[in-house]
Image 1 (cartoon, helix red, strand yellow):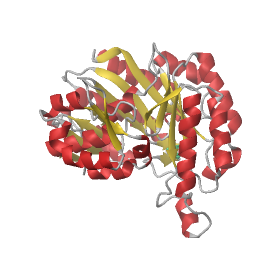
Image 2 (cartoon, helix red, strand yellow):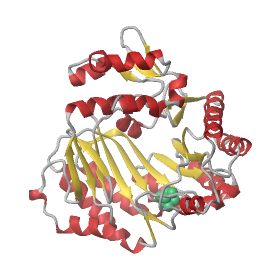
Image 3 (cartoon, helix red, strand yellow):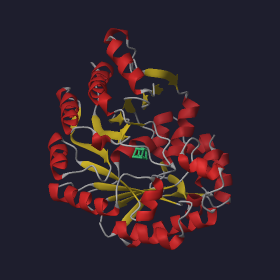
Image 4 (cartoon, helix red, strand yellow):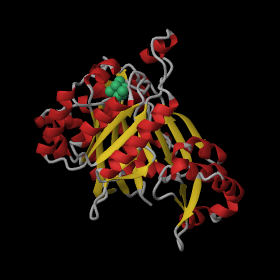
Length: 392
Ligand code: SF4
């Protein structure tokens, strides 16, 4: 069985106006102690396990404000265990405005082979209102730097359905990004989260969430524009360049959507291994203290000394999760034979009635003859949350 590792890097230069992630601005003086704790947590949890690590992901926060030597050291620690596959996908989330040629060269030399750039928009007004640290020119320059250094697997994260955005503005923003030919796009509609400046603006009546019909039009446009430009829509919010020899789909994120095991290291990180979900403490200082004080002998695999929650997931919840996550893979869907091998029951046996009703509503469909797969229809993609609720 393949395993994935997620490392959370909760440092940012400043907090963007829409952000409710577990990240902290102005705490860069903790980076050294935090990265040492991250290495120790990995060593303690993984110790003596037989794993096949095929993806590693450094997410944030802004991982690209951490000196590259820490990634080199951490990746070397992982390699030294002998558990990492040769062709391991190693992704680092990076923000435009933080990527010099030298830093990118060091990341490349450390073993990072995939970059996920937090582009968000190619429109100056959007970037300013979101309070991103970067400009459009920095997106272009940093992307060019990454190409020059040799990164050939780059994702662009972008946001649409901004309160002030209209359809032509979104089209321009996306089209400009497409001209840069990243191998992958992740597109998410903005959610105005409590506790953010955008939420306060909404409370004061200064902005309203985007109209649902306009949001659907923006999404529909993305599906069409990316398809015409050679991208496969493989997950509700994700597109990968079509290439017969190489897949640019995110192997790490597919681990989540296939409900396969992953370890979560760092403050606030989530893990799911051996049917057990773990959640680490969110605070940087609390995380460092817990790891520093702990001793490996007291650990019960796969839990970490930083875990504040450890829950065993029962089989019926595992089956529901497998359906809800797997249906996000809009092209592949959920394979009946894989489901049956995992749970000793077919999808038909467990969810037959619910699926019949969803089929009648035109929201899901069975495809394939020998290896039957259940997937969302085009209409189902737009009403995915309604479909997912049926499996709860
Ligand atoms: S860069 Fe990302 S994680 Fe950091 S504040 Fe902005 S949205 Fe949040």
